[in-house]
Length: 177
Image 1 (tube, rainbow, N blue to C red):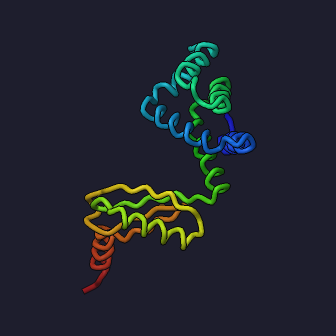
Image 2: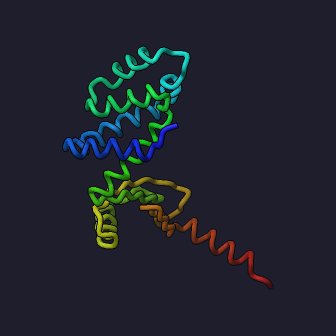
């Protein structure tokens, strides 16, 4: 079994040294999305029933236009029968990239879509608070009823109406009359 964190970090360091870290990050996201859409492909690339040369050929067909460093990385995972660790390696690459570029990925979940000015204000406030460049992703979840749930850097702030109602419900159920 490979150490996905070490492999992801090594890929990042190679990409950064070559000045290709941004390109590799973008292509890594494309590969990640493709593999999530076709999870059986990951299984195929790890199975001992298929010859390694054939699997490498499949990788070349699918990802032949990616940056050679990334393509070689995918082939290495395949040769080591550790392709199932790709997602963990990609996460480790992203963590290294984020740290090197002082980037913070944040997700705001609201009941209704946020206006552009709200997104901008939230991003700017997070940048002031954290001192990092914020990459904000916005999603909607009607079950929140209102308010916002914010996730970033292992922190979750839940100021949704649903969370407030749940807190009130717990408080009332604990009250002794």
